[in-house]
Image (cartoon, rainbow, N blue to C red; front, side, top):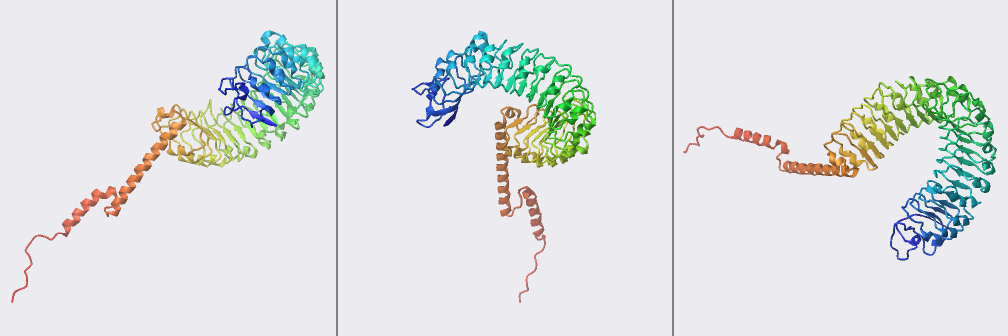
Length: 572
């Protein structure tokens, strides 16, 4: 058994070229000598292939072949030689037809022809697909289909997944009721005005995606009791479909981006609901029934014109992800502080002025979004969230933060900190205690210097400082070995010069390292010179001049005063 991925290092077997010369459509892969024909898996995706590599037709044991995201225009008739092929991915090429010999692949279970100009030839190019009776997965996304050939629904009885998103389908054939094994159907981005009633009769169907269509109603007979995931976003519903409340096994429901003004459905019937999407609907209020869904963990309420939450909202103790961004909250909704399992909370683009200390009860919170609010000062209460990994405090509108509180150092798990579009003049030295920090975004602020402590963050990979007032960078930036992104555009930098900054991170590091080297050399020379002076008892270099003058004064004092010489002893 041998699995192989595309490599540009060894061999040219698949090209069918015995000369070994490299060509644009040549596929190279490493393999042990004598085992080439036993390859089971081959990935040749995104390699700029213009033609189908004929060499791979010799791989008698090949079961899975990836040729997606290339420039292939046709599949050769010899494809029928790959009798053991089970998975064939050809999406995002330039295929305008499917050869008849494809039907010889009797074991093929998964076929992807998405994003090709196949449909330009009408229904005929897809007739061969109808003969692949063993297919389990068929993806025909974005082919420009205006109708689905009914033969697909009549003959592919084993089909479990059918992907038809991004086409121009206005209806589905009634024969779709024949797909009794179907588990997943994807119809997003079509022109459907109604769902066929036969869809609700499919016993195995669990995932239905009909987002971005023209649905305005959902009859009860079109809904299946086995459905577990239903996506209805971006349609024309003005009221909540009451038929959904009979779907007792539904775990995920998305009705975002509709015109819903109220939710009259008895939500208490959706006892299995784990994830609910209601974003971009003018609801203005949340019905209390939602507060009593026992298993609800994910709730999206973005841009729903909310000003507050129902008191019973605090009973959703299983909640892990809550999106309340782009609403009208003037005060922090304290009901949220009771959601002890919450891991992600988004309150971006509201009118909050402060954060209560009670938020620290969210001991599991890992991501907090507070961008675009009305904070007068840095919300110090968030520094008590010891599990926090991502904090968003950018400001696109309203008041601007001018400083960051020193208690930011308490966020020992913080990995990403976003402070963009504020008026912050300096960062505290305590930011150097955030040893797990990987991304720091301070672009478009008023920073004139970077604290040296920042250069101690060995895990920092991205540092965004564009549009500030920086004139120099600390030499310690070169110690940030993990740093991959350093953005400095829009700063009046002189050290390093702007032309060096434009060349990227490598040039900046080289400039700073050279400067450090020169400073170190100068320091060494100065130290050596001072040592010489001391050893010669001439004192420090800077004191030489003053020492010379002092010596001259001392010499003058030692000289005897001018006058008569002493008389010698008398001679006898």
